[in-house]
Amino acid sequence: MTNALARTFQAVPLWGRPSRPVIIGVSLVVSLLSIALSVVIGTAGISLGDVFHAIAIHVFGARSSESFRPTEVIITELRLPRALLAFLAGAALSVSGVVMQGLLRNPLVSPYTLGLSPAASFGAALAIVLSNKAGHTPSSVVTIFSALAFSLAVSLIVLGVASLKRMKAITLLLVGMAFFQLFEALTSATQFFADENTLAEIVHWTFGSVNDATWHQVLVVSILLAIALPYLFARAKSLNAIAFAGDDAAASLGVNVRRTRLVLIVVVVVLTAVVVSFTGVIGFVGLVGPHIARLVVGSDHRYLLPFGAIAGGLLILYADAVGRAVLSPVVIPVGIVVALIGAPLFINLVLSKGTLAQS
Image (tube, rainbow, N blue to C red; front, side, top):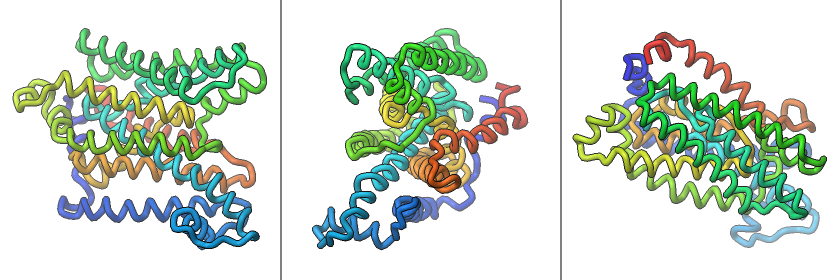
């Protein structure tokens, strides 16, 4: 790994190691408050007290008045699942970016830049078009599996070719970007075969949005994260060995590099595909979230994984809040807002001294 990349992955955190668990704990509290505040934003005139009251009604069985019922429905059926899905989707995409950057020892890698997210988006769009052509309402299960299949296929092709050809980091990134362009074009092509209703559904995936969030989607992503995060945390030391020492040194330390890489990539693909099938392509979260987290807690994956999840979750949550507030009542899709943040950072990384030139 080049000196530039080494400096990126071995960044010194802004706070000392003893305080990192405290930082993560405080960030969790901030996340909960941010989710509650996100529910308040809108034109319905909902207060923070209304949010906690509505939650208390459903969780603790508190009393509810008839006059409060419309507010309760807005909170529990529209805004709360939207805020939770935004946070959970950001957490999943950011964690996926952390893992990919560690496994491939490249700070510019993410599910987005390697083409996994666009492939998943095309898979979802294709499932929608074919289902509508057959006269069926597209099932969420079919959409998820179609997104998963295309995302997994791209990851196997990109990483398989990279392994066989022993590609440099920059070459791998360029191959990923080629797949990104390919599946962006294929997704656009599906729009030519779509009627008005189908086209609207495809555009949802193109922009990236949490407008139609449901409790079912929140539950699915929550379960995936509840399984994936503890597993990834248990593999944090192996991921550290691969990221900092390389494959050969990691193997000498007892890490089964091939199996570890394969299993972790499958975890990343599943997280990415499921999130994309619900929200569409929200680019740059898997790139921006890990770098924000790395600046705060350093590059040790025992801390980077949980804080990366929090950073990515807050990034999409705040982006969605900005998208709803700036031109209210018009809602700007969260994918557009995140891209406005992520694109300048990506350009900065590409142009930073030696990051690519020495790869």
